[in-house]
Image (cartoon, rainbow over all chains, first blue to last red; front, side, top):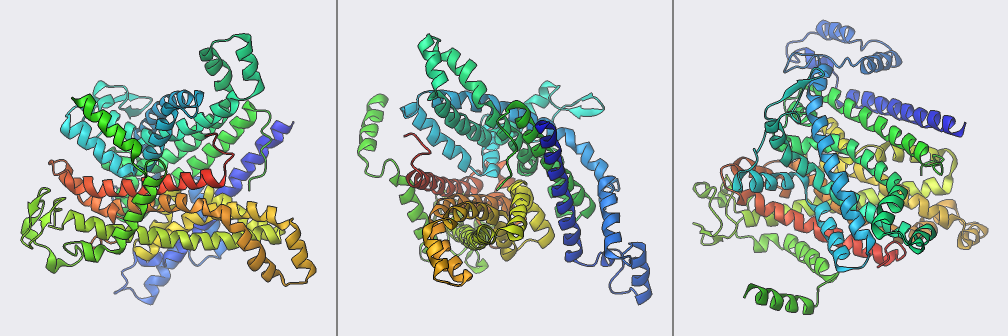
Length: 327
Length: 294
């Protein structure tokens, strides 16, 4: 029963959050300027032209009606036609999504495996030279600006070593009606550098979290009991410690995955990876407003949904989580 | 031979007085001094077209200049001295991030203390806003803000404030909630001091220390975010390069092997953020000793 109400409470929270965001977006669009002047020629337009455009855009309606129309368009994915590509903006975003998705998934798999491994190694013997080195390296890794890291990966991996291509998706194969680079060798080679660029800060983040969790759990009674029982350190670490710190790790992976969708903007721009991040930046520079709106809305909704799912997942995994009120 | 050199080096390293936590502080001081003294130190003003020799564009590091100095770090595609660009760019990066952090901290302090002290609907409204902001990735919030506001230096600062204030507000609220129940607040109430006086003269100063640990983290984030936005062409104007746009300027030259245009400004940026993060970590460990076992 509590789980049931928790699920509904959290979902309700996410819906309210999305509602407030749509409200802010609505106000923001109107604060930027009168959209009428986007369609009429300011210099030659007569008063009647402006009047007609206002009615055509529905701006003569009361403000709550305008909001309802706006919200309806959002819900149905109707963001208008791209000024540049002359395609519906939302389908354009959907078309670019697989590229971003596969990049983020590969990067996250890399980050999660390496991060947990490094974190366990460091957390097992806190205070040793190895641990201190890992801790220090993690601060460095978290300090590298992602765009510079990407460029240095290009410099090292593509220009100096000549091993990997510096940009693009390479060959793709079709599956479920979309193109995927992970399915071809050439595509995988193109994927290595951008995935590394996205993964490196996350490796550090996950390693730090795992380390802190390991140190905390290793001091608890049940671990001491395992040790007294004569279990090997490896078995304790992997079978007893790891499951007990898995909840915060899963949480951070979920959150960072949403963050990757947003931060892919930088990496995709540099590696010319044709995903939604590159689409967003290109559209901002070309003043293609429908596409900008569609992309930002999609990423926000995806992030909020992902957040809610992670919270629910926690509640299911860990009965101690009673979804405490934030703040 | 190599092992011997390494061993000697290690010996000296061990005796170096600034080894552990002091080195980042030293670096940070050096950065601030360099930024402050940029006009005195830089051989050319990269924002002044009359001081730039366009025919010396893309010179490799170490090339002598027609102006009687040496391009120790090379020049970029427009002939600007990279070393000078770094010094001037440092000023913009530091200025933007420090100003935005200061404003965000002030707003966060006021909002957090009000939320904790007034409770009820003030608390609800402020904390829902905080939730709204913290539940979205900073990059996304900054992008939305810049797209709506349009890029320029003051807009960047505004966007960074929007990104940062919530973290301060949440922390201050937590601290102030603890402070509210303490005897000195009751005593002040008994003296019938006006609420705003209790709030700003008693509770607020006592809520500041924990916030101090947040400042370096947030400044580090702000520098990185400003650089990223500038890199994407959404930050400071192109003719006044910050470190981020200086790196961006070199992107098209990177593929032809002119690595220095991007490498050195990025290295400077990396060093700056890393030293701030190390100082922040050190500060946090000192003020909150139970967090780390070492």
